[in-house]
Length: 212
Figure: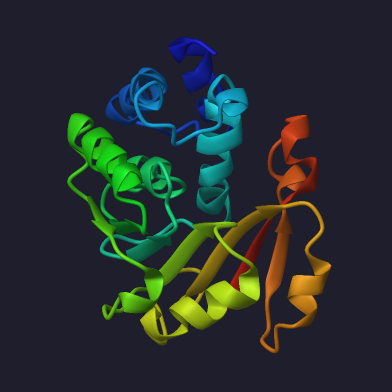
């Protein structure tokens, strides 16, 4: 997908993007192509569908909640920077910490954030259970089973909150994971992304919100 077409896909769902945001989204494609040839952070079959399967998928969170300035978000198992990088472009006044245990992936995240001058992004090579800071939200794209993620990050979420949703976990995943949900003894809300995005890719994709 060419840069102009890619931005049109994003604008379809986020029509109020500033020129700077549009330019940053346009540049994501070339940047990820460049880095993926050197460090494989996105599967070869997905790199051509980067804007739909990774960028727009990450931005689903931004269709559910509009974060207020100075909100702190932890992206666990960010890989090549998803959902953190697209969300940081969408919410420039929100602070993001992107973490992954694999150093070469964090190197890519740092390079892309620096190239785009995303001053609201920090990246660390660290495991989730080692984090001692507190955040308003933890975001993740199916880095591990949801019950496991809950145990890893429960202590990193600050109570309360000043956003349209209370502080908690925002978990993106596809397919059937009812068995995972059955083991959770906390309230949660499921958002079906097919109700948000028209593209067929999102037919089985969901966002689960678990309040702290």
